[in-house]
Image 1 (cartoon, rainbow, N blue to C red):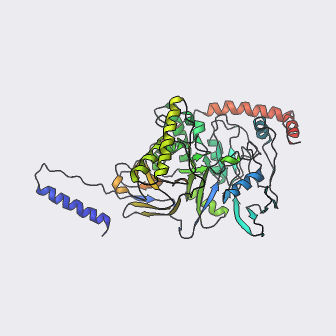
Image 2 (spheres, rainbow, N blue to C red):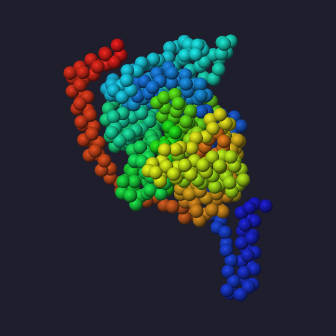
Length: 505
């Protein structure tokens, strides 16, 4: 018998019994909302699609990375990445065999980093450890000692981290369209690159918002992105306004580079979802390495659900939200404590729960001493949790996530954990649910974030008019005018060319 029919009969019988009692008798009736559940995984064929490990944000010696482009490609390949985007600052990636750089940015970075070589791939050659490789402009492939091709790694075209000289790290990663090469400026200005990428048909994401917002420096979870604070309200409204206007902006970076600076950005994600989903669009969460050195390459990544490893399929998966964000790091004290308590209560993953609890205690001590420094690190040698399938039942109002090598799934609505378990019955949590739910999965080898499941139903939160006016334009104008003037003077007097000559000699 259908569960909804069973529930209706139960309610009818309860009413009949209550009627036969005195007028003072009372009874509780469970809410039975008719949800329409929108899943970003609706078109994924779990029996044939693969999940491709992807890094959409990485750097080389082209700007401020410690690894050459050749080394960056090799090291990502060594960590079993299937897809890679090289996204140097203000420098569009025209190919892993292209040595082009943004001279002004490279010179500025070299003051901090020292003179660094620029080395790229050839159509074929040897890796640093003597293995043969080939590169055809789209795929990089290494070969074993017998000459057999191993996994190929797909290059994401036109990667670029926009706003290279932004004084407040207002960075945007973009892909698929040729925009922003050899630019400077960008302080506080997210809208210009996002608007242009949207116009050209590309895709982009707001990078590490905790840096721009200053949330990375906040002492505790409750204070971070508290919209009673004028600054944080401005940031939330600013990002919501951009997301509502430009579909090309997929969402925000929710866990990258070891998660210290992004540790509160899942909270921002939930705040943005509450504001933006009622307007008719989703907000996706991405995870990346933002690698500037070898040690951080295998930190955050995205798992793309695709039938085959091609550029068209990648772009479709990204637009649809058919992917999971994943990381080996977790920096939020509140999240670490929550997972410790949930695992212990369920009696699963107890060693992991103890590790969470120990890390939580250490962070508390550090905060009491002045500043958090510790981040929880999962075991990168352990098997990573995996989502085997996602299924939605609009009749039963349930979402089920089938997992492998995972200890627990928990479900979040409006920024709060409302349920644990592989299946959530939305009717059981109607009082806690707004316009979406999303899931997080932990195992010994990391954490996985699903994309939000948006909900339509009678009584769902309605969109609010966003009257946001970006007063940061004055900051952008002042900062960028100064930077652009200085660069123009240096170019006119050939200073950049002279410095470049000695830098690359």
